[in-house]
Length: 173
Image 1 (tube, rainbow, N blue to C red):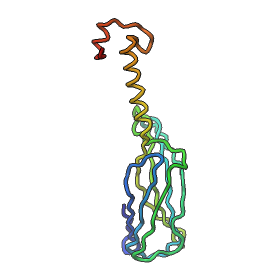
Image 2: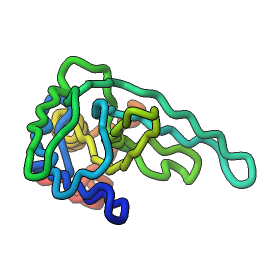
Image 3: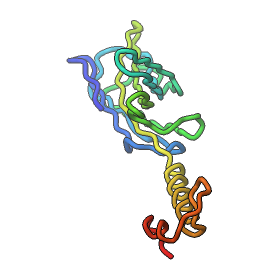
Image 4: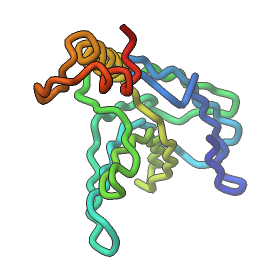
């Protein structure tokens, strides 16, 4: 990600990846390539953006989950600022996109620089959050339910199946 104001400010930020587990650590660096404005401080925020509804009645909600001041004072050309954000301490949910085309949850890293005149310069980068245990748990419970149905010859509603229905359902005996 690059922030560039012609002949005033050029910075680059890099993060170790773009997809993170909910208990992961975001590691990165901010590089100052050109600094011709007097920066007072810099902060990084984790922003949760929710979208609910369908067009034209779409409701947007932004929440700042975390806010860290990562630099205080004026940087110089060539300086780099390390970033390390631990996600485990926050109540985060996995990223969800277009659930039934009515609901989405996205997360952004918002890098904000504030100069001595209180001007704010910012850039957002989307990050994807995921939870491995949910995927494994769902697939395991689905497999267990299918195995139970095949083994007992019943459906999840308690109906009894005939042997021909069991073979039609690809249950191995």
